[in-house]
Image (cartoon, rainbow, N blue to C red; front, side, top):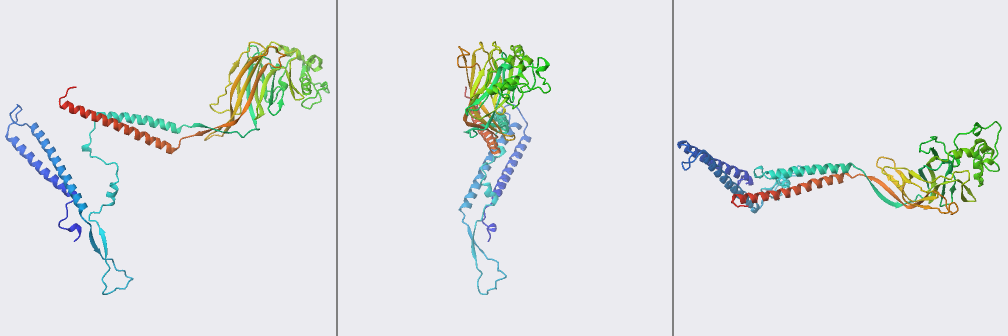
Length: 510
């Protein structure tokens, strides 16, 4: 006999529940009919002590129904527990199973078929029941859940907090930050660009020269390539706007007679023993003569001794510019080693590897080195780059002042996610100013000196964005944490309300 057809099989849980509910429904229906019949035979009275009204009947009916339901639930739980205990205590049975005969094998007469024993459970759980046992989030019936105003308030507040934090986390996920990293700089000896823009309001352009020298011994006097000068009137307004570089550190204004800038046919001016730096054999202008003298290391003391300068009224033109100012701007290409560049007054030259500055009598003596550093950087610029000397202004109360800036240059690389990389430099600065009391016989020179030192380290900035996994982890942490804290707060409030309500019902005074 199969287990499903046995005469003493136990009723299922569904059958027990149906029986209990039918029995309770019959009892409740009979009680209701009895109360209705009794109410129909008696008059309805509302004065105290005169009998039950419909309201009293309804309240008694609700009380009886709740009591019956509680008893029915207890009986159902007891029956289910008994059924589970019996199922666990029941031993599995052994059944015989005869396998099908294979057609390929010959039939053997007189040999009983081979039998095998199969251990089976009468009430083996199905796959869905097994999966259901792993549910860590057990659900409760809606009839047993209680909703309160305090719980709703906690839910609204926690939801707003979660939304705010989610928006902030998403904004942080979409943003890009620069993370610095320090490495050893291996790019020594390469070329480096220095961008410079300095204004001298009380020094004329023809008086100023820019020179460069480095630790390897290389020197360049009166730099004229990629360096430009702009003349300023005494009020600071620009006089010249041309972009032509100033050879030898100066360019005399185009004034004077026509002979100053016009070569006659067949005319070849003498260089007076000097050698033109461009390899020319003729010096047709005063500036050519001056450059030829500078290349030989000779002093260009008196312009009136040269025919070209007399024709151009060179000395008079210089004196007319004595009250002007000057802007020196451009860029320098230097080796990436320690060195300095400076802006000084007078003619500069290199003689026997010695750097010489000479101030002549025809040059003005009422200038000073008050200056404004409009811009100074090393290499390319990048966003949020800070140059400490930009827009720095110094006012010289006297003429014989020497300004020195000591710069510590650190190589910098910026690696972008979606843009080309930038290789540049940052620098820090320490400044010093001193007065040369016995100028010009103190062994020092007035001017502005920029002494730079290259750091052996390099800073690398790399753009980084948070990964998607980090963003999702943060979202889960925010939602889970807020809901957990909100659950604790709600449970505490509900517990406090319950305790207070019970005390009020008992009539306690606070």
